[in-house]
Image (cartoon, rainbow, N blue to C red; front, top):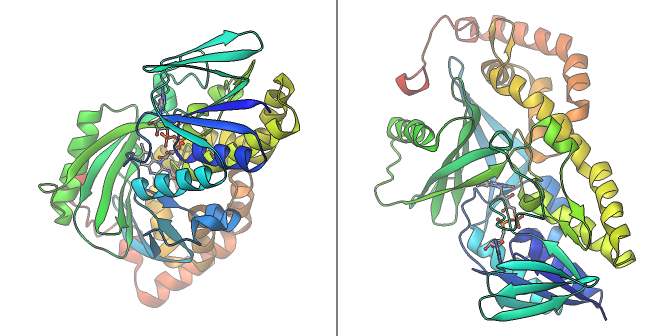
Length: 400
Ligand SMILES: Cc1cc2nc3c(=O)[nH]c(=O)nc-3n(C[C@H](O)[C@H](O)[C@H](O)COP(=O)(O)OP(=O)(O)OC[C@H]3O[C@@H](n4cnc5c(N)ncnc54)[C@H](O)[C@@H]3O)c2cc1C
């Protein structure tokens, strides 16, 4: 029996371990912290729990949120009632759920930090503080702050967003998403069981300045961080050129999840891609434990979702900084969602993960005429023209 070592026991590592050990491979997972509250919103889309029903069919505490409020400067806000709610976990609970499943499937779980991985014949010698272990193959699932320099994606500054926020002891039943001026990123408020995850992500802006923007928003919205816990982390957000040269596999190893940069460059969704990439890596490895597995994995990733995320990376700047009909794209998005059911349905598709980026432009263009007609009728009927045209500027101070 071949031994596979999995470095990192987050959602990607734990799911790869579950699949491989269930298929009979000798699987060992190393994680320095095991289940922990990894800085994260904890939101799972319909795409994730529809494809992996264990994410919803379990007794672990979680929230199902069906209402999202989208807001952008100079556009006010709009409430979306989602046909497919978002599922929200605390990351401690989600990680524990997934590690327990891996253990039940037969994986050995070790609480240890892997400090070195060295080639040893056709396999690997892995070093931890307390000793070393031989493995025939490695799955690298060490997350965005992967300390192992020779394996996994190479994250340059332009391939990552800073992400930070507070866990606030409050209850709510809706998600808030706030776009901000001149920011490739956004603020979120995600309700979890017993607390909120309130955070901000942004590319190309120092963390201190993102924190200031977030705190100004929280003051405006009356959300206090005084009794909350601060968190910060890195969110992969690969540029188009980086997708093309992304290092996801090499001799004797494959990288999954954040360690392979597999995060949606617009929404920041990473949990689904962590689980899905782990699934694909396990499938490739179960066919053959050799370098052919890495090649097969690379092809499967591309076909399955990586090509679409690369396409998304080309749209990212236009989504956050673009202009349409004399207004910013985020403002138009909020206004069109408010006035057009056709547009609203496209946005819902983006929220539940069922709208691929590569078909987005065609869908928006196809729906443009009827969308504009709906807006014209709605505006004329209800007299909301002033707000749509931005003539009554209700923009709060922090978002100017
Ligand atoms: C602030 C923030 C908010 C987010 N919100 C969302 C969201 O709402 N929805 C969503 O889908 N995605 C979200 N994401 C992205 C999501 O958190 C990640 O995509 C996801 O956690 C990736 O899973 P992973 O298993 O690849 O890595 P991780 O979850 O980071 O797990 C990596 C594991 O590796 C371990 N490790 C690291 N180095 C070593 C080592 N040398 N030896 C042993 N163990 C090691 C760590 O302890 C950790 O447990 C968010 C990210 C951030 C930063």
